[in-house]
Amino acid sequence: MWYLNTFVLLVVLGPSFQTSTPADDHYVAAVVEYRVNRSSVETNRDNYVVLIQQAAQQNADVIVFPEMTLGVGSTNVTVPIRGLLQEYPIPALRPDLYDDLLVALSQASRQNQIYVVINIRENMNCIQPLEGEECPERKQYYFNTNVVFDRNGAVIDRYRKINLFGEASHTPALKPDLGIFTTDFGVTFGHFICFDLMFQIPSTQLVQKYNVTDIIFPTMWFSEMPYLTAVTIQESYAYTMDVNFLAAGANTVGVGSAGSGIYSGKAGALAAIMPGSPTTKLLVSRVPKIPGKVTETPSGRITDSPANLDNLRLKQDPSITAHLTRPLVEGLQEFTIVDKEVSCRFRVNLSNRSNTKYQYRAAAFSGVRTHSGFASTGSRICAILACNGDTKDTCAIRFETYTENSTAIFEELTIVGSMPTSVIMPEFGADDFVVFPVSETVSIMPLEVPDFTYYKNVTGNVTVHTLSLDNVSAELHMFGLWGRLFTTDGEDPHPSVDDPSSSIVHILSRSLLMCILAMFAFNQY
Image (tube, rainbow, N blue to C red; front, side, top):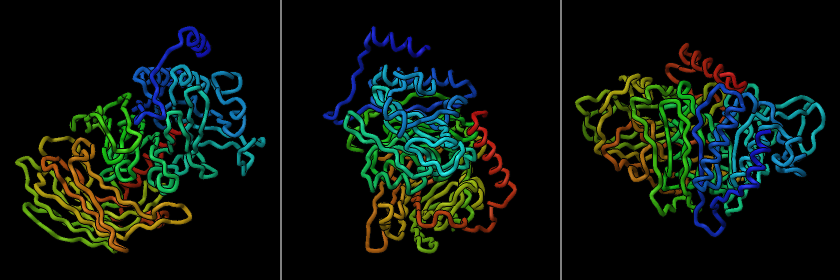
């Protein structure tokens, strides 16, 4: 087999890589923005091996690959983490016992002395009892699963996705086990997958209950304007939770999947990309072990031209028409919008350019929204939104063709949101409510950290969140406070005047998305 020949070559040549140690104040991370294709698993496997080699050549200690990008051969892989892998943890050394895919990537991590995180479609066959596994029924289960290899090629952790986004062919993790592993360079990582980011378990619990400061995030994100485009939510999660965040995104721009990055707490993006064209890109950066304590200039963002982003399909938040809104006018204005327990005070000084096309609205929202009918989640929001028309249903929709200088100028912009103070839910060891400062520019990227100021003041049962724009030249699609209220998850979506969830446009959109997800699940897209 090709990987055995590679191993023989390794023994003869004995490659040497510089690796981080527990004494270092940083480690080196790599994430891959990987173009989804219809090639065989062998092609994708070989691409992965090359990317692992390239990361190791840049002294990366860990490399992260996206969700569901290995292809058809990743649909029948078994990962006996509590069984056979206990006795034979290195698939590269026992190729007779494991799927060729695990053997090949075990060999690549071993050869290049690097931690490797991949995502596969895992098969668990419960027709016969399995050692250490929970088998409620005698059948085959398929999971969306992360697999972690250490520098020796040993499988050291497995995480099964808890919160599925459709994925009819998958089963959620039968037990909500968290993904946590510790490295030889003194860093403990938590890891979860894509839609998991939206939920208290695991994304908030990992940080608040288990004090994990470094998170790995394979994803195939379907970007949604205005609050949930990929890099916006990745960077805001890292900023708010004050963690290092390694996000590897699948790249299929035609369905809205794109966006990867390496982020460090309040320092923001160390490296990030949001491409508008089919792309595979390896991002590598030094990451401080104390999130936000950056001591050198990072490689930074790779910003695509706004015109190229016309090719990126972007969904619209279906709760927009349930937001309470007020149109902005030119000049200085100050007002308050209240939606139930959320009070949003806005101070805005707006002026139009000669070519301004977008109109803007201030918005407040307290309610429940749907995620394409697959789940519903609670939100509390104060925000400024760009609209391509004069009604609120046109907000959070880009013009089909980008026009330069089509945004307004915000000479002053401050949002003060008064919202109930979060409380720890004892059964989960995590807050019931988290607020994220979010923004989006015409490049479908968030503002850089120096471009805004955010702070909060807790006064008993009410917390006042203040967000101010510091970069008056920013070309904004959105700027605001986006809060996740976990206690109302699963409730019926907040009704709106137009009820977009039942409109023919939204029904067709959801049907299209379900077809896309089904095709991805079987690796036929």
